[in-house]
Amino acid sequence: MEDQTQFKFFIVDDDIFCANVYEQYLANLNYTDITYFSNGNDCLNNLDQNPDIIFLDHNMEDLTGFEVLRKIKRYNPNIYVVMVSAQENVKTAVDALKYGAFDYIIKDSVVCDNMTRVINKISQVKTELSKSNQTIIKRFLNMF
Figure 1 (cartoon, one colour):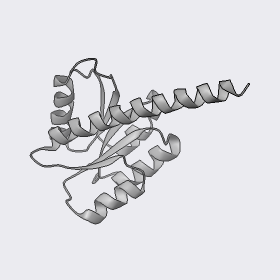
Figure 2 (cartoon, one colour; figure 1 turned 30 degrees about the horizontal axis):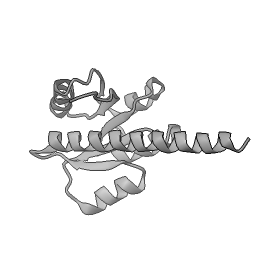
Figure 3 (tube, one colour; figure 1 turned 180 degrees about the vertical axis):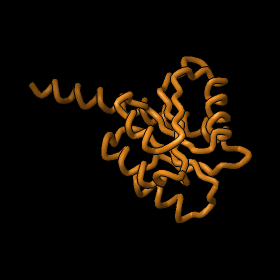
Figure 4 (cartoon, one colour; figure 1 turned 90 degrees about the vertical axis):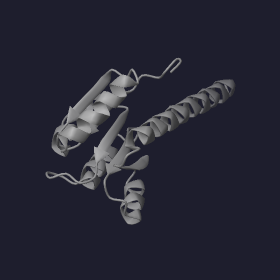
């Protein structure tokens, strides 16, 4: 990847195998700032590390993904949370988006490809927001 944006990732999944696959995949894409949590509470207790993107498992033992998602969004609505789940239920995906998830990825044979797709989409959104913010600032400064 040319001129790749570096993000700080949190991976939150009580399935260590899945978490290791995601972590290794991101490392293979040359991302270096990746932190793994095996439960939602540990993730919530470390939000002060200011992650950019959180890959959040839907079905965990301590707190559900939805509970964690709502608390993340209350803490900082600008964190990009991507819900990851083995559930192919449309209602679950729609609810994740309603609660503030940026996207919903199904744990299947192309989960890693979908992670790349979502990261690229987030990168594009951040670029466009930055351009918009610069335009707004210029307009504001020209008012005076």
